[in-house]
Length: 151
Length: 99
Image (tube, rainbow over the protein chains, first blue to last red):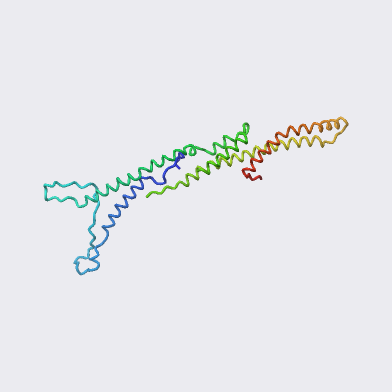
């Protein structure tokens, strides 16, 4: 419950989205930490002892520009697809959390229950000069117990 | 992908109603106590008047005349007594624990 007594998610939807995207990026960067197996199994084949890593896809910081097709000297960025996949994943995740806001609206029907302040209600009833009728109190007790059961 | 747990919200809202209901039962008990204390005080007053030792014949006749009025006065108190009994029945219905 928020400070104004309204329901809210314990985790922000956007926070979840960013954590998924971070996992995607971390997964990609972890791939680049995998050393070449051949260097370990057949050390005689390699003159240098410098660790060699697998060649893996890398997510560019921004969408690589498509080179001029007429210019044969410039090759398109081989990681452009990674960036495209990242963007696709991002839009799909954000799309998937959209209904969460609508779902929260279904709780509006309980607005009166959220606004209910038990201490204020009790204080209002506990009027010694003008005490409420026991019958009215009885009806209210039964109604509130029923409501609590329903909730 | 997402798990939504409504239990805490439901419990919070239900607890609000139960808290008010509990306070209302306490209020009913408070009223019952006030009314029954009033009735008891009335009977105590009557009792004191009746058991008072008369010092002379006038006082004795005064007590006798008062005693003759007692049944009527008790009948008047009957309304309050019935009201009090109804309230205690109510408290029984809510299984109120009397201290």
